[in-house]
Length: 375
Image (cartoon, rainbow, N blue to C red; front, side, top):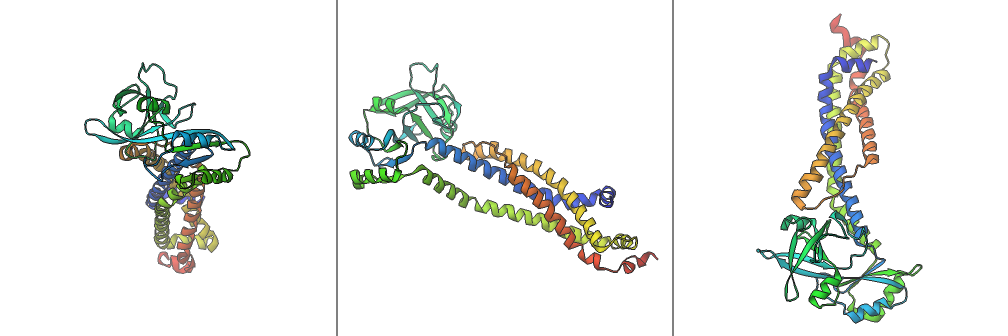
């Protein structure tokens, strides 16, 4: 009751104390929401883009290494292989400026085969032109939308495609266009591939299949990768990259707590007479400490709530506006409720503790000396 009465009588002081908490919570909350949203979106993208059990790459990067059709057939006939998904990569120059863009040719066989943000993998009403799926970066760079015509230099001529969908791609900043592998082979006559996704039969040990491939192809195979290991590696790099963001959040929390500590230290000193009178009325030192802690926790609770709303708004702007303008890709907005609730509770408890410790000096003063000026 005393804490509530004090806050009602002096709301300006609560606003001054809570301003730092609002700022630190808004910064930390917005960063947490953005990073978690990006990480979860990246994880979902990896799961969508790496559905096979094992991946075979003919070259470490680029399009310089190939697997011939005979080699692809040999791999498909190995024990434990239930199916394959070949992938062909090319680099094209399109448009009047000759912009470089990545071309990916692979089978599109089922719904959910691509992380689409618009369109469909089973397009209808596109006419006689074959379908193409473009990444968000390519859509922004080329100013294309669903149903738009897209001219690609394939083989010996320019082939017109129709945009059937727009998909999320975190790997190629210059943009990417995906077409059916069968269409690519028909237009170019090139049946070589760069990568193979291998689907294994139930109970097959991937390590055994990798040994068979190495024994058969030797140094002709550059990489054999398990999708789980690749996913863990990419997410590990992501976490290390955003480590500085976590440090920024910690600094923001420390700044907020420092503001509470210094503010309540100053307030406790200025309230010596008030606290002395409360001591005369029978309150003990621990009760005075509890009073300061309750005031701080109530102020921090309101400030944290405001900070969370502000942080959510900032995160939405970062994800939906700034991110799209800067990187030309989207991500799903995720709310890390557990992290935000834990952070909010810890912030309130630490604020109460900071106020309790900061007011210790004022509570140690003699109650008679504190009020002698009024006698």
